[in-house]
Structure formats: C-alpha cells, structure tokens
Amino acid sequence: MFDFFSARRPTTLASEAMIATSHPLSTAAGLEILAQGGNAVDAALAACAVQCVVDPLMTGIGGDCFVLYAPAGQPVKALNGSGRAPAGASVEALKALGVTGLSQTSPHSVTVPGAISAWCRLHDDHGTLPLDRLFARAIGYAENGYPITPRVALDWAASASVVAGDEHAARLFLPGGRAPSTGERHAQPLLGARLREIAAKGAPGLYSGATGAGMATHLRGLGGLHTPEDFADGASAAHWVEPISARYGDYDVYECPPNGQGLAALLILRILAGFDLGNGIGEAERIHLHAEATKLAYHHRDALIADPAHCEGLAETLLSEEVVGTLRARIDPRRAGRPALWDEPEHKDTIYLSVVDRDGNAISFINSIFHAFGSSRLDPASGVLFHSRGASFRLIEGHPNAIAPRKRPMHTIIPGMVFRDGRAVMPFGVMGGQYQAAGHAAFLSNVIDRGLDLQEAMDAPRSFAFDGELQIEPGIDQATRDRLETLGHRLALASSPLGGSQAIRIDHETGLLHGGSDSRKDGMALGF
Image 1: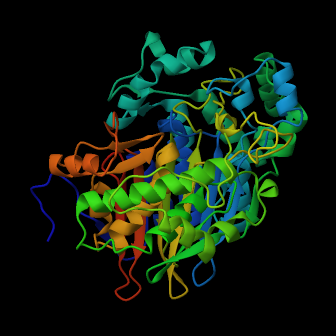
Image 2: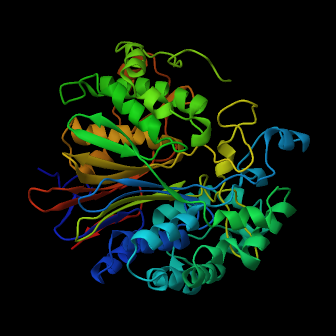
Image 3: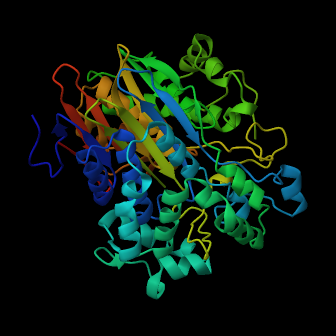
C-alpha cells in the first residue's frame, strides 16, 4: 500500500491517454493536444517545443533528438536525430588551430543541431495535426513569457557563471545580471519567431536561408569551422534506423543503436541478468552489483561507441553470450574491481518525455543540448542556443569517436522502450547526461526485479559508479554506506539529484495506463 505520509506522489492512473514530462507546462501542452484528438507524436512534439522554451538550460531547438516510436500493434522503430560535425572538422584541422581539447564552450563542440530535422521527419511520417497548432503553446510562452519553476530556477542559478561567458546568452538568460528566481517571468521572443518559421517552412526554416547562414557565420566568428552548407545539409540529417534490444527477464528492452549509449544500458542489463536482484538481496549488494556492471559497460562505451559507420557490428559483439559471460565473470560480489575491456585492448542536461495515446501508439522521446545551457553560445540574430554535443568527440587519431568531417559524436541521450510478448508495455527514459545508461538499468531492475510501481521505482535513492567513485544520493542510509565502503567503493555524496525520469506502463489486461514522473524534477504524469 502507498505510504501517504511519505510526502511523495503515487503513480498516476488513466485509461485513455497519458503523457509524462519533467515540466508541468510541457505535460499540460501535450495533454491538451491529446484531448484535441492529436496522437502520441503530436503530443510529444507539442510538449517538447514548450520545454525548449520554459526549460532552456536543459533542451532547445539548437540540440539533438532521439526517438523510439511503437505504433499500436507494430514493431518499434528508432529515429536518430543527432547532428554532424562540420565538413571541415578533423583531428588534424583542430590541432593545426592549436586546439588540444573540446570544452563545453568551444565552438568546435557545436555540431550541426539535429533536433528540428528529427521533429519534422517524425511529424511528416506520423503526425496528424499541423505544426503551427502543435507549437502554439510554446510560441505563446516564448513571446509572452513563462514562470520559472523551482527545479529550473535551482539549475539556472548553478549555471549562471557559464552563461555569463557569452555576452549574447548573458543578455537573454541573466536579465539584470542574475539568474531569474522561482516565480519570476522570462521570455524568449526570438525563439518564438524561430518556431513560427519552422511551423511555416519545416526544417528548411531553421537550416537554410538567412537563418541557417547566420548561425554558421556566428559560429565561424567564434572560431568554428561551420559553413552555410553544413547547416543546409542538417535539414535532412534525421533518419530511421533499426533499434537494438536485449532480453531482461520476461521483457525485451529496446534502445537506439550507436551513436547513442543505449548499447551500454543493454550491456549493463545483460550482465545483471546473471544475478538475483530480487528483494532477497541486501541494498548494498544490489548497489555493488549495479556499480560493477556499470563500470564495465561504460569502459566499453568510452572506448568503442561512436558514429555507426565507425563501429559496425559492435552491438552484436558486445551483447553476445561470449562477451557478456566474460564480463559477468569479472564481477566479484565481495569486492569492487577495476573495469577492463572484454578483449583487453585499452584506449587512453536533457529532457525526456513519454506519451501513449488513445489508439495505443507509444513514443519515447528525448531532446538535449548536453551540458546545462549547452555550449552557452547563443546566436543573437536567430535566438538559437547551441548544444555542446561535439564535446564528446576525441582528439585521438584512430579512436572510433575521433572527430572527423560530417561525423556524429557518441551520444549520452537515450530513449527506452519495453516490449512483452510482442507488444509495447512501457516507453521510459532517464535524464542526466552520463548517468542515463546506468539509470535505465537501475530503473528497470526496480520495476522488474523488485516489483516496484513506476513512481516508487523512480523515487528510490540512486547511485552511480563513474570516474573512479561511487556517487550516492542522501537517501541511502548509513548502514548501506558503511557496507559499500567495506566492499571497496570510494563514496561521494551527490551534489545534486542523479537524473530524472518519466515512464508510462501499459497494462493490456486492465486497459489502464500507469504513469510516473520523477520527483527530482518539476514535472508530472497526467492522463484522462
């Protein structure tokens, strides 16, 4: 029975349609579209457009997008909406310019944004309502203002110093020289104009003509290698691809293939499938096994995952019984270990939403600018804030993820979809940059192994083994912490909540939809 003294929300229930996002205005916009007869794709686009306005440090039209879409009664399909590096970008070219690293704010960390290409491709293929109708709420908030919500205000203030480094971004996002506080009003009229342009002209409205050329010119003025041709080509960047999957218990878990890190999430799950993570195991032991599997999977992610043209066959190899068995055997249930590749060669902020409509179409949708406020580079003419996804590239010749002309970087953003007996049962996702693959595995283990409902599974305290330490949230009790240290983990208290998540579970027997929205964010799940 739900603990109503817990100060947490219960799982949301509905029977006809549902949407779950990390911002209340985004959820409301998508629900409105569903109530007006729009489908899951329509609602997702409306909700994401709103969040690009009201949560600008997490997402925007200057970012990238990945989608898993399961039309009712059909197989799931994946949409890769990640952008490419400029045609003139290469390790050699950047080193000739004296570039030794790709920082968040470097113009070389800005790949051509792929989000709008993905939105328009998705809408052309599966949308039912016109874009101007879907963008109406977002345009209204951009032009007339929107209230700053508590979590947005917290993150905005924490990133103020990054924004201050770009005069154009600072003018827009630090009005009066400071981050706006909870309840204050903020507007982005130029972003409203861009959404109007996209609604009228489709993807070319952003990537071509004066807008596309202007963005290229601005980035070039910062030292970038972008050209108008790079941006014009970006209009058709998004494309449908075959998803990858792995079995976990009685479920088939689907992810987008590389260049996303969904493969790392599946690898964690495949490794954990060899252990009993039910309610009979101690919490410290559960966290330990998840941490060890995470370290192994991320080690492979960083060494091998890249643009699919540069890592062909990787998913089949890493998810094979041979590799998974080798990696699983390296985990000592009694001691933290050091990760290593299966064959031993060594290489030295986001929003997510789920929708299920009245016809049973399900969509898992993620849109990101990577770091908080992306690259912090804002084009003053268009109002577009550019992401920093190219910071994932390596400047190592021969590395699968080395920067190269028109290459896509390794991506952390990953939507997820769960099937059972050939039917979609749950679009889900976890935000939080590097945490996402680990978060997918932890969330699904909470639901499948422990039998928690969606909201309980999301609200459970989190941990994340990354960069040599085990980050833990304050909700993990002292006895568990002591045991983890005994197992050899170096603990670090997380300075901010680990990620955020949304999910909608489809109960085909009762016809009910169960929705959850992470309490670490401002959002909610709503349905009717």
